[in-house]
Length: 174
Image (cartoon, rainbow, N blue to C red; front, top):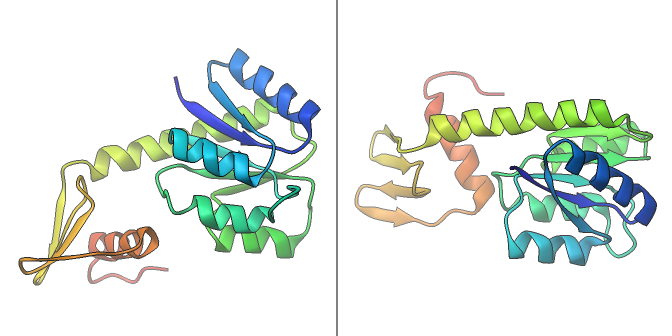
């Protein structure tokens, strides 16, 4: 059963989303603000995050940037902000999708399923694979990068970028 983190400051909306998603077979963890969301992520990695941008203690885009430090969980922004600039900001810091409120729960559940399926496919492809290009090797199962025999420490986004480039060596990557 996939675990979803719902970050929403409005208690009624958060409860409605939780009830609807639990009825569809998901395990739901709730967070009313950014600090609670960070604590929930630290307590147990969710399979997917539903993130409202209008939080009382932290800007939702900043929280999205922080949550992206754990790149394996897709982030779907669910916000009343129907502003192209905010959408672009959210995508730029790591959001995988952006849904404008009010949300139809069936549509949201369908989007969740797509992102979870895609994340599972990526995990399956990446498991137990070592990518090599020259003296650089990336162990995708252990998330270890080596240049020759030396281990290189990278931040999560740096690792992700290197892995994408290694998978597409010799090709243009946008």
